[in-house]
Length: 266
Image 1: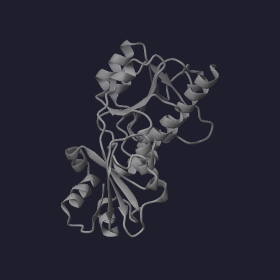
Image 2 (image 1 turned 30 degrees about the horizontal axis):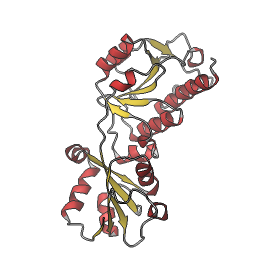
Image 3 (image 1 turned 135 degrees about the vertical axis):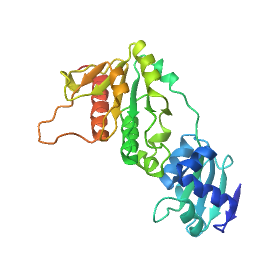
Image 4 (image 1 turned 180 degrees about the vertical axis):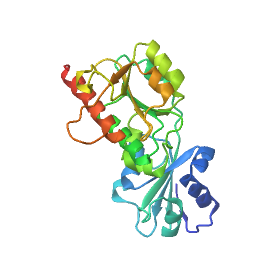
């Protein structure tokens, strides 16, 4: 169904604008995505897209004109003023969409005999979180688990940084301590980085079920979560840098896991 909305005072426009804040997203159990690529990826991945908004001045992007799911979503042509009100970017793109949140559980990740999971403990920067999700997708990870205190998954900046990878693998939210205890009891390798570790990541076997724990940009992994890790590694550095960005460190670990799992050797 295709309609038009021209007024920024329209009740639905006001509701969509609330999705720019976490409170509005939580209350409505929805979030907003912007741009042709993200909307296209959401549709391709059969995400629960509720409404697609596109600029009546610029028209529907060609990439979306042949969408074979058109009957499942509501398609609404809107003015540039409406797009500006409901989107996060300074110069609004020509298309956006409202998506219902998926309800997923981390329990399914526990049963994977060779699972590769990223556990996020308190990361605050939306760009870092989005990059980690994108790297996890690229490396073929089984999923990403977000602990309490982590930046909102549905923050517009986080979503943009995932470049659509949010739709390609399970990204679930969970209380980390009980989940990690269950994982440890099942023999899953719970890997944390530490400057005091005796082994490097290149001397570690990633071919077994492994959960990579990544902590806050400044404080690192919380004390409780750190105690539950059963394997510590260090990422070697030859230069004078004191540390690596958390998203960069996570990518290095994920790609070492990919290397080992692809070639079956350490």
